[in-house]
Picture 1 (cartoon, one colour):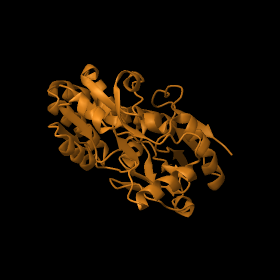
Picture 2 (picture 1 turned 180 degrees about the vertical axis):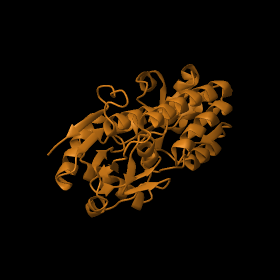
Picture 3 (picture 1 turned 90 degrees about the vertical axis):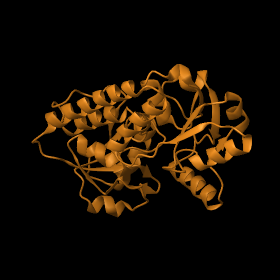
Picture 4 (picture 1 turned 30 degrees about the vertical axis):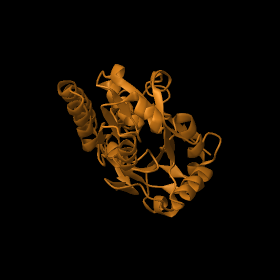
Length: 295
């Protein structure tokens, strides 16, 4: 089956299911595995925000959306040339990826007959279910069930390790200028890791808030997980959080690798957060996963 993935998490799911050779098209943000972006045709482009501050990125996104303009560009001719049988996309967040409706409109215009599967999980359980859905649509349901079984076993191991221990109050900051709460599946990760999410929106969209909300939530620690950034970028943003929330321990985490992309590596994120919240109880995370940040 010829597959096109229009979001990084779907690309990771495809490779985790052993279907990397069937993948023919990706987005400019698909960087895991690294070969995905170099060996496949890029069918979705967007602005390179490297060098922009978080506030500048936020202003750019809001201006584009207020004008009714897209944040991503679908290379329709390239998509048509690939002639995919199945396209994996989403309607979860216009800021994160191209909505499925845009894809379907383009296919109608081009006269293509590809199937479109929209992956829109709002919880950790729904993320795991989306893996099963991809496996079913790509003809490898047994692989998907086995993969999800292994992921659930790892989650169960973390739950057993932290059972009966006190649960630190954890605030996750998903953006810093302006501040955004943790939404969607992110609070589930904190809870699965043995923490109590605060200033959060479980199962709902992340929303803009104030630093006062984080302060009044009285977190025992803060994790900074800015969408679109790996650990280095998260560390840079976490320094601002440390200034805004003095006296509260602040940690940065590899957001794209472990927290914000709804794919198999969210379980890696649970394990990393558990190691942070309950050191010595679960194995330490690999280098490059988390880092303590001070002003």
